[in-house]
Length: 151
Image (cartoon, rainbow, N blue to C red):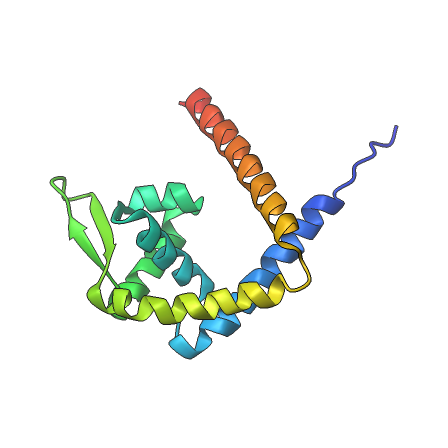
């Protein structure tokens, strides 16, 4: 018996993700940044200082690639790591330089978003955002539940 599956939605989401990353990388290239680094910067700007573990969990990425991106941002003088009470815990925050440059990077990313959303009504954009927030929340809840069961 053949199992019918329609994976078109997931395929399209993957394509969109790849294209968004490509366009973000192009927009950030003049600033010697990549989309993965921008994601760290954006998260720290919007959420404030976080531990590396909190960043991993929020961004849903494994520790090794996040560590590499954080180290690159440290070398560029855009983030700093602060040792907590427990020497194994490092808090990560934006530097003053990053705060100064942030509006320029934000404008570049806003321009990309505007280009990519051209022709999409404000209502449709709002609906899409709402659906994505709901879906993300559901996935995160399931992930937390699965992790608790594994423990």
